[in-house]
Length: 379
Ligand code: UD1
Image 1 (cartoon, rainbow, N blue to C red):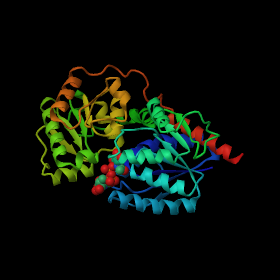
Image 2 (cartoon, helix red, strand yellow; image 1 turned 60 degrees about the vertical axis):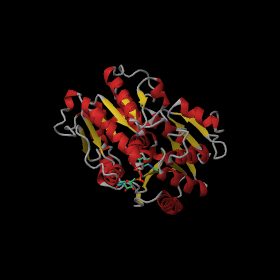
Image 3 (tube, rainbow, N blue to C red; image 1 turned 120 degrees about the horizontal axis):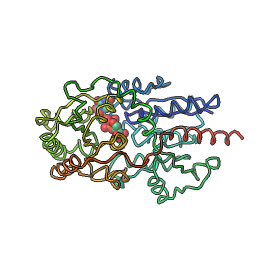
Image 4 (cartoon, rainbow, N blue to C red; image 1 turned 120 degrees about the vertical axis):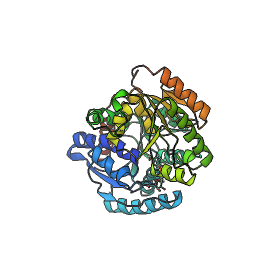
């Protein structure tokens, strides 16, 4: 059985890590797993560092698409992925998360009648003005295998008519299988935390051992592309930084947006640094007192590493974190952000309760399901 994983952006490289291990250990001789990199993220810091840290094989194909407007980027990927799939003829295309690479790969495969499996299916922000929401909804609706991280994701799909109950062996594009498998990002944390802990201090001079700093990231278009909103967030982080120093690894989009909004010189107490690799970020976050972010993955990683999180958005796909008191939604309002940060700093969450994202075997479950589906195909 030929399975092709399509990845292109940072969070997808992280998800690919446990999947490669699971294909190596569980796929056996039956599965040939190939990797196509669209090139959506191409910088050494945004791509190569992740392949190195996660010990990922070099992609079989790199399309080198790079940046561009949504239409240009997605359209170029669609054309090039179609070519790649026609050459390779995979039985199943695995897509991850909610990026333009996810959308392009899902559409290209579906139009060629190649089955699609979506890892991280069923997530919803209920905001169609987010490019990620459009990407994930469309990917779900052309998938044959929908691998959900949470019960909430399963329920979201049911509301859209994608019901659980179909067996893996009976799944088709018209009647897909919906399976709750847990979250492959939990697998990735479990597999890499010990290695991360042995890394040298990723931000020298910070005093990582003292656990007296916050980590912030901002990269979502809704935050970076509105100068007024970005200004508010920077102001809020500046106020938080009066209580506790804030390390801010800067996504290239954010660095550009800050410069364009004349916010290049950050308030005192905020330390802007280059994007960190996966292991360095794990090391940094696991020693932090607080995370402030608009990243979906980082909200979960904060919980998995026992660190309180303030989310710089008005909603989140990871609602169970808010319900469990691990995550406070603060939007871009400086007052709300400061209040949420202070409350989180004063009453840090207790040791990780429950297994909201599974027990670290999501990737194995996914690979076993792919094999079950592929075996049915051959019968
Ligand atoms: C993408 C995803 C988002 C994900 C994020 C993780 C979409 C619509 N968005 O957003 O869901 O959370 O990745 O980081 O797919 N750039 C570089 N070097 C790089 C990559 C990007 O300089 O290696 C710059 C480019 O100038 C580009 C900008 O960053 O214009 C944004 O990159 P893009 O690929 O459009 O999306 P992200 O914002 O990274």
